[in-house]
Amino acid sequence: MKKIFIASYHQSKFGKLMDMSVPAIIRNAAVETCAAIKVEPSAIDVGSVGAACNIALNHQGLLAGLLAQVPGLAGKPIESVENACASGGQAVLSVAGKLLLGQGEVGLAVGYEKMRDAEGKMDGKLVGEVLGYFSHPDERAGKVFVFPHLFAEVMDAYMKTHGVPEEDLARIAVIEYGNARYNPYAQMQKVQITLEQAMKIEGINRYVVDGLPLKTYDCSQISDGYAGMILATEEGLRRLGVARTDCVELAGWGQATDALEKKGRDVLRPAGALTAMNKAYSMAGVTAADVNVAEVHDCFTVMGAIGAEVLGKAAYGKGAAYWRDGHASVGGACPINTSGGLIAKGHPIGATGIAMIGWSAWQLLGKVPKELQAARPKIAATFNIGGPICASVCTVLKPGA
Image (spheres, rainbow, N blue to C red):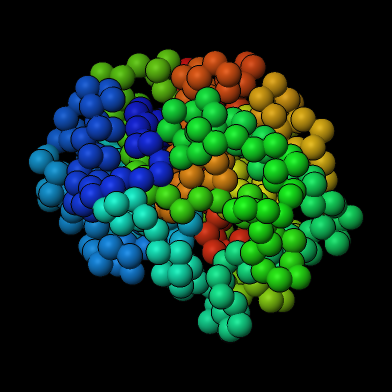
């Protein structure tokens, strides 16, 4: 099987894109990702665009056609993908699959989300309603904000099943805000919180659902942003003039989807996520023990804990303790979400999966700010989810040479 490499990664700062239109967002993502390695978009053979709320929030479909509108990309095999919050990761796998099928040697994955208006303001009620569409209709009744409510239930189950205090999950948010301080692309770069603030119910920090433990600081951000990634075979790298030493290998990946309805599933042991992660490890020829830097889908703090368990870095029920004991911190055994994660870096849905892989690639290449750089990173892993731990996209990265 051909090897696939990450030849280029680029992202916007996450947070607010103000009055930038969707066509401009997609154009910028493509052009800027190509410019990062000084190639023209015409060098791209295949492409994929990931987004989730583009129709409901932006009234825009057929995103593939917008990517094809970039000079040099017309008439090429491009598709739009939607897999809820795993749309970005799915776009990367789509491109990798096209390259393995022999449809080209160089591919471009783009992901974006525009969740705020032209003034940078968000309509929380509308966003909550739209995100709720990615749940099973039978699980929406009686929930004002569907996804925070569903994950508040997951958080409650995690705490009760494993005897984990709220403080241990709040600490994950504190660590990630601390990381975001040094990430110039992070939405919450200029905001810092203490454990006391993360635990105290006052001001913006409140319980999101009565009777359940999820608080405001346990939640990821409503974000605008875009990200782009160029994948290439060895022949593609030669065409691009990019050395393998300047690349990262997309060495393994896995994708699995569980039933959409959360009821009846063991979401604390998400079968699809574990299957996808194990497939990625097997394809890459590594084990969890080999991974020493990672990005996981912490849409809520409990997923930071479960994510550590899906990676295999923590035993079942011990993910929160893995963070509490410093193993996931920069300088720990396996730094996780050094980018700030979705909680502090931001969560522009369609861009998220690409950004997780891109930041992990930067870690292996030593391109992240020194305050966030893992010591001697060798193998990186990512875990991207969509819906109520329903769709899972996992990847494993190795140095290119």
